Image 1 (cartoon, rainbow over the protein chains, first blue to last red):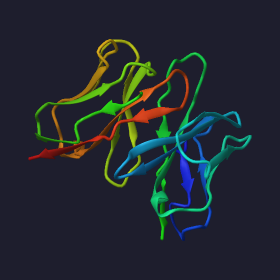
Image 2: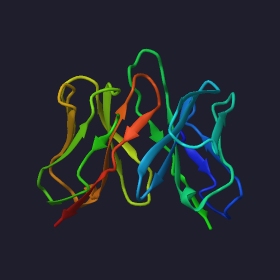
Image 3: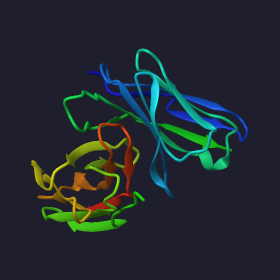
Length: 116
Length: 110
């Protein structure tokens, strides 16, 4: 099976602009989670989508939003970019079958966003 | 709160054993995950514990004590390629939400 893919891999934006990042999960995986990784804060949970619904949300401002499509592909959007949004944005997918209490998450390679 | 604490850096010698500790506040988590992340790469899953005790997977083992809010990752027969960041993460039930610690950067020296 192909792994989690994310596009684009690298992005440079200017303060005030908005950006949309895309994630395609492993085939058959219905849960998609997004994380922000920075040297100072580490890996921080943004939100999780399951069956096109946001199931969990982290402590990020409303400028960060996401959605999931019927084929489980997900996008996240950041509006009014700030310098502090420069980070590696990681997407992870999980099979999420009801007969298992926990599921390992498989991470994509990430999108490196630089805000200038 | 859901803080997860782990040492920032560790150094060990090739062929040795190293234990990376992780402590967490017990409320809110009912499973502990360990991930490995090489510089410039995505995290890769190593193990998870939902019950107290030791889970062994080849050279890697992970231990959990839920009452103490304590976990560790044990790496045996260290190899140079084990130089990486090791991330401890708490999970809540059957969801994709993980709360990560800051990660422990392990340097393996010859």
